[in-house]
Image (cartoon, rainbow, N blue to C red; front, side, top):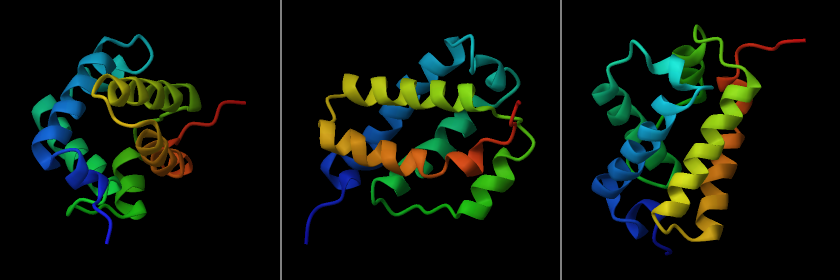
Length: 122
């Protein structure tokens, strides 16, 4: 049986460092930073660490229904989603994740675009 990406990259402690670095970029982003203006970032990092861990084969799990509920009132558009994807990709590269592993994580993220994107401008 192959090792999960979660185990390969060091479990919750390592994923938490990646997520913290990602949010350092996110809050500074002109595009997605405003989404986090009134957010408890400690709780946000904790939730996102569990979510990314689940995508990497870790013990946490999030249903698509839960993701939809959490994002439904945020009015996230495609540009904002793509900025998030770009910043996460950069962060994974900075933490020396292998290209194939980054692609796998990005596939999991992108497969949920229609759940997270709640604003569709014409």
